[in-house]
Length: 388
Image 1 (tube, helix red, strand yellow):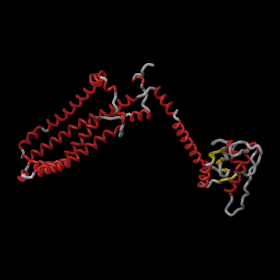
Image 2 (tube, rainbow, N blue to C red):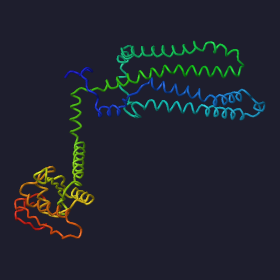
Image 3 (spheres, one colour):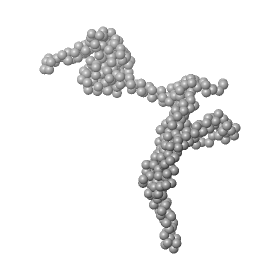
Image 4 (cartoon, one colour):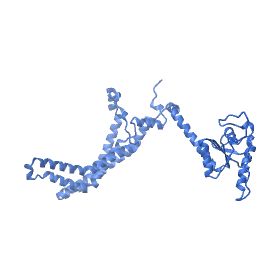
């Protein structure tokens, strides 16, 4: 079988394909976006926090270059002082380092999320192949990367050169200022120029992110046959089928329970079976089953009926006959018309009786002999309309 070419992969990657790629450590990343985020955060922190870090560094350097006379006679004083000065310097730059780390992690995970994959660290024999190594160095992709690098350098150099050109006079005048003022102005000019130059990095990142996304999706594209094979693989897993069936049952049961509040009556076994009926006299020629259940589902139907003031009518044989002969949404069979009519007439009568009025006699519907079932769904050999 001929190897499939990239031209055959025309379909977008499925969620399962993307998940497997993530497990292998293949996620969407943009190195230019990370570089731009880290560079901008570091330079911005230096520019905005210079009023705090500058004096601390000046004091640290002053103390470092000042050696008291007693240091020549105490061997531990110099090492202790060096440790203190090192710690002070480290504390001064901690905010810059912390911001750079947050920017690096945040920009890297913003596109593809945080991923740790042991497969990404595993050695690959293909990387040890010198022929493939030469193709990576002198191949088309290497030329494209070289062109991108030259374009990035040109853009950064152009923006940096433009900043120097526009501020050339002010940079020359720094030499005529007092030493302290000249140092402050030099640092501010350098940091401001670097911050302006990072605009180029931001522009490059805005171009690189869509490009990397395009390349990432292109690399993971699938053929139509791969999608079919994946669907067969997923659907063929027993646990997946079981979850699908369970979810379908849950959704079907919930749809039935949503219909119970609008039912006219719920006929019960009373414990094991429950069937909810609705009868729209002007629209339908017979009552219709809107929900039915056994055991736990029957209990939920009864609870929903109680919560919504739907009449519950205990008729074991009728409940089982309806349960085993009707599906949800079906009209009741003609053999049960008379039984159900008695029940619905009784329910309508209850709704029309005024408080304190004459008490209605509860009917005892007689189920036809050929529609009598036991609790397993088998027809009873001996007809009986007694309560079971």
